[in-house]
Length: 207
Ligand code: ADP
Image 1 (tube, rainbow, N blue to C red):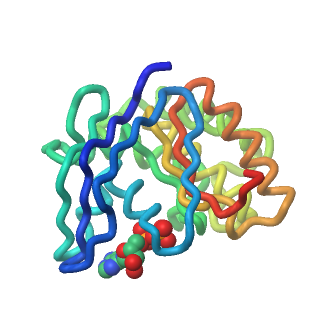
Image 2: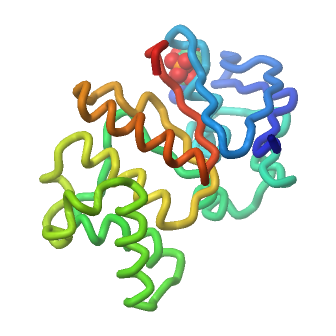
């Protein structure tokens, strides 16, 4: 298996508090890597360095390197490109307050895609890959906020797939879901790992 992300000598500080200490870790391509550990041990902080979400915290400081395809994410100038390649799905689904269609199309539009047919095809393809198409194909122009929690979570996954993410970070993606919705997301993650590199933070040992 090839290494997709290589973490070397990573230290992370919130002001004077050190949250990550000398992390060295290889993440393998087309595989699911699960991070398990007690609350506060730094799991979220670690995955947030993988798409530069850590930049959003004032007074935070990072040392070391996180290499993706041979490029140091931590030194990259084009953060938008990094976030396109490394998508993130959060504990609480966070669709935009827009239609289902617009939720997927938005990422393509801000990346300067203007071809309406391409966008339409990509929306369908992404929703199919996220196992959501059959649920929503008749209601693409309805608000995404009307979907169930599990469907919203799959919509957020589709949003990452549309902009051709290579790595998808999941931060406790099933924590707010019922058992049936959880099973659907778990099944989907197993399917996605054939194509994508998956990193998941979870408290569920079975998961
Ligand atoms: P986990 O995901 O394993 O629960 P976190 O990465 O959220 O752990 O947190 C690691 C440590 O960093 C904790 O001690 C937490 O209190 C601290 N921390 C997290 N976010 C911030 C922040 N924005 N400002 C200051 N400290 C933070």
